[in-house]
Length: 183
Ligand code: URA
Image (cartoon, rainbow, N blue to C red):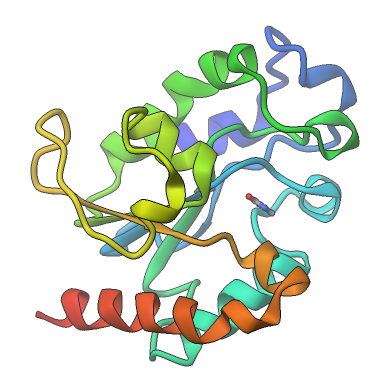
């Protein structure tokens, strides 16, 4: 199976391979109606091999749980790149290009009707012209190349750690998603 093969592979054709401990593939339910796409695994995720298992992940869990959605049951969580970038730097165009086919496969195998794009890099990956992020956060959109999917840019949960005042807005966005999923 693709997920297991990728997790257990020792892919080396990328600049991030040398510094990683784990290839971080996914967490949650592969049959979920929502796929959430983050940026890159952090240090904790790299150590454990699980996406969004650190503090930002806890914030994400709580945010969704407050609206009746479990990140392990109602979502599949993945990242644009599967390996931790050194020093937590932003993923570079080359990293994104190398990992692109893996992300495409993850999406192709997922039946998710909703694609949550966690912050700027994820939005840019799918809709580079939709800038700035702040003009699109919380707004659903469709793309002709991904029929049957609705995209929703959301703020990254790591922002909540720095700026707790964002919580009401983020909850409002997740609430709108929960309502849409239920219909
Ligand atoms: N931030 C991300 O974007 N992804 C993770 O897996 C963890 C933190």
